[in-house]
Each structure stands twice: as structure tokens, then as C-alpha cells.
Image 1 (cartoon, chains in turn purple, green):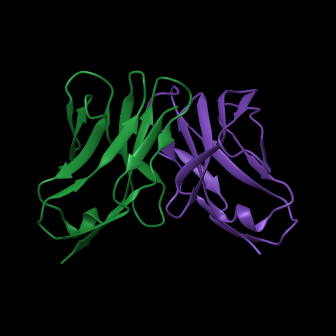
Image 2 (cartoon, helix red, strand yellow):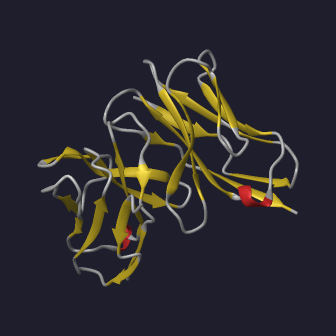
Image 3 (spheres, one colour):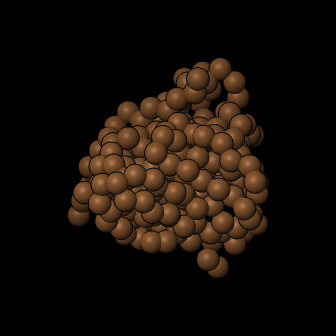
Length: 112
Length: 112
């Protein structure tokens, strides 16, 4: 019972490098989300998708890009990494936009 | 715009004591309310939710929360906590749209 799987779990990037955080879900959920979690700030929505081929910006999209070519996968791309992107990133999915979300284990990213 | 305020960032409590984690929200429309729990180095998982019906909702591990529309609150309570309840707890609100807003989190620390 995999649920939502994120890779990698940890990553250190140098300023200006790029990387893709992978997210896959096996529950056939239409809705998928990327959040970042910073200490004392809760979760901030970066991007979300309501189905394959449809994505939209959340609260903090700058510096990130996403794609959704299949129902299962929702990768998050960081271009030109900056120290401000040091955070823990969570991918989540849900059946609809107002039902409970299922979260992955998170990716801890440090930009130095 | 909707928002969620968790009034305590940290709550230390002795084992077997009662606890209340406070959550207030602002919204001009009907809401769906959630409590999520995050254990160390893990993703968030749903603890309980209020969608409609009875204003008192319960989880399988002894937590309960009451939706109070007049006070716009959804406080989480447990009559007797265990060491294993040590975690961070997030209150979240959705107004039926695509986005769920999370509070900043309350870190519950249960001491022996």
C-alpha cells in the first residue's frame, strides 16, 4: 500500500543548481499538491493540479515549476536554487479538493 | 479570505493529563475542518475531520474536536495523553474549493 511516494528524501543543492523532486501516487486521485513546510509557518501551497494536464499556482510558486502528464505523477522542478528554497517539501493527493489529503514522507532540501 | 490561527505554538503536558490544542478560523462561508498529525520525520496524516452533521468528531486514538460555528473554532482535545502523542498537530480549513489552508502548527510535547 504505497500511497504517495516522494524521492529523494534528502538533498543538498548548491546555489544556482536545478533539480526535480519526484512525486507519485497510486490511489488514482485527481488532485495533487506541492507544499513547503518551514518552521513555525505551517504548510504553504506551491502548486496544485486538478487532473492530468491541468496545473495552477498556489501561494508561493516563484522559483518552481510543475507538470502533470499522468494522473500518477506530479514532479516539482526547482530552477536556479536559492537559499530561500531550503525547506521540507511535501507532495499530497486527494480525491477532490475538499476531502482529506494523503501526504508523502517529505523531501528535506538544503541549498548552500 | 480564509485563514487559520493556532493559538499555541508549543504545548508541554505531563503524561495522563488532559490537553486542548486551540484552532480558530476565519471564513464567511461554510467550511470543512481538519486536524492532521505529523510525527517526527514523517508526512502529515489525517487525525479527524468535520464535514457536516454532528459538531463533535472523534478519532480512533482518543482525540476529539468540536466545531463551534459561533466562535469559529475547532479545538482538539484529549482527556489523557500518552508519550506516543508527542507530535506536531495542524488545523486546516477548506471552503469547498481547491485549496486547503493550514495553520502554523502546535507542537505537543508529552513528558513522563
